[in-house]
Image (cartoon, rainbow, N blue to C red; front, top):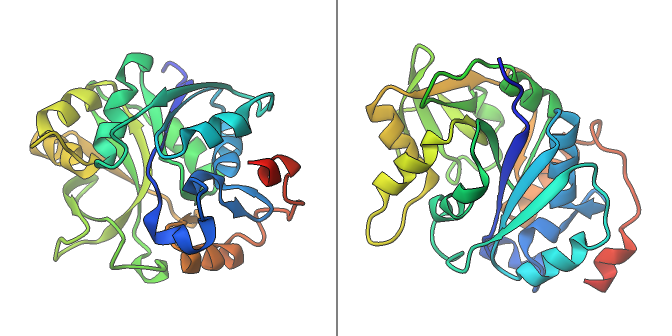
Amino acid sequence: MKKVSQCLILAAGNGTRIKSISGDLPKPLVAFRGKPILEHVIDRVRQAGIDDVVIVVGYRSDLIRRWLEGRSLGVSITLVDNPDYQRSNGISALKARGEIHENFLLLMADHIFDPETARVLLKQSLMPGEVILAVDPNIERIFDIDDATKVLRRGDRIVDIGKEIAHYDALDTGMFLCSPALFDHLEAAIKDGNCSLSDGMRQLIARGRLRGLEIGDGQWQDLDTPEALAHAEDVFGSFFHQEPILESMARV
């Protein structure tokens, strides 16, 4: 099995639900345990063995570019602009199509996770045209169930996905092992110029090509609101060491 070396991180949104503490900063640059959320994500990607990272940026991309200038994070980074960042995240993923040619890890820039979960996901054998979604069956530990994307499984296959589905047995962690075929499914899901990742996943479900992988005791959190950020501080207290806020952040 060929090693997966690329990761696509979606970081284009404007983060309206965290505006009370982010101000004009894009959400990926909001500080979490002393450094930007995006730095935590990139560091976890590096720990998982990825060395080539593609990041789709949109809202205040100038600030993300400035933050990255002259910074060594241990991976090669390519930025892709999404001027349509106010559309759904499937459009952001499609903007990176020209940079992705092999199987890749797909992550959200506002999801913190245990790097061991990424390592386990990367070890999975991916069938042609398939996507594997890391899912959390521990529904009771989710901080904001209303905002979470739910999944329903039959065996190891996901048969439904969405925030509003009535029946579900696990949660979407925002971590995907993908083949480039994902882009074809996102294209097919576009309606009125827009599509979400979940729309693309439903295309895969219709073909029996979306598989779920349980994360077990692995931790993850969607840092979508100030309250979720504070909750994650407690959850990840034993995973992260507090560091002083970077001087570069003060200059952003």
